[in-house]
Image 1: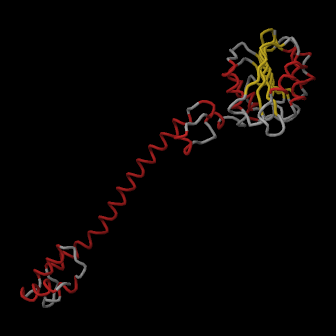
Image 2: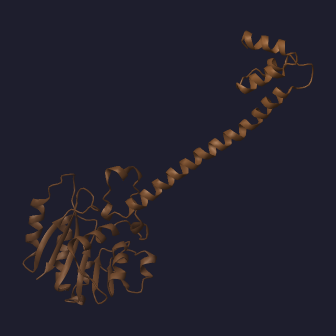
Image 3: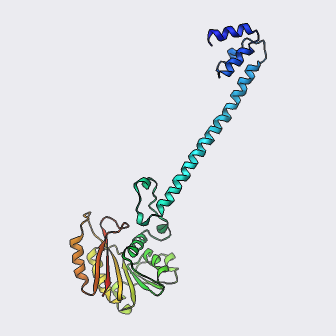
Length: 274
């Protein structure tokens, strides 16, 4: 306490004025301010104590205000995340990437996130399917591509010796055929509008299997197959040209697409039966 304040307290006789001065100034010397009194707490001390009792409430209110502002900010970020989630094919602007959730609602509703590839491939290639279309999924297990195609077509044949997920088998228009692809060609000749293949094998094998399956396609039918290359090189043009030749003259509009849903070494080959 400075000397002027002490002198004022002595001249005041009761110390109440000095206590008020200290309390008004927000002073921390409550005991010293009341030392000029004769016993009980002065009015100044009471005010100081009341101010001290109110402080925790003010702190709580300040915290609540901060939390409210923080909550509002969080809400804005969540809203931004929803906008990001609706962007197609996983394209995310730089400003929103920090809040991007790779597992989209589409993938979350299927047995495997590989469904993102067929979703993107169908839209990019403009492949038209309707309630009268039929499709075969070669190497279907666990069944995410068959599951995705189910609401788009009349019938999906999920061809794979391995097990298909129970959720996919429960779909009324999905039929699991426990055979290898080459064993179902004869029974399905000229019956299909779409052949899809996402087998985890070398592109040479994928191309041969799909080439053998071409007779199953109707004229104008579409072939979509994932080519899973080895290594990290991005230029697959030489290899893709070889596969175009291998498919033969019965397939036209052969193209190689790098999908956003593809891994770096994957490509989507699309072709239409002449």
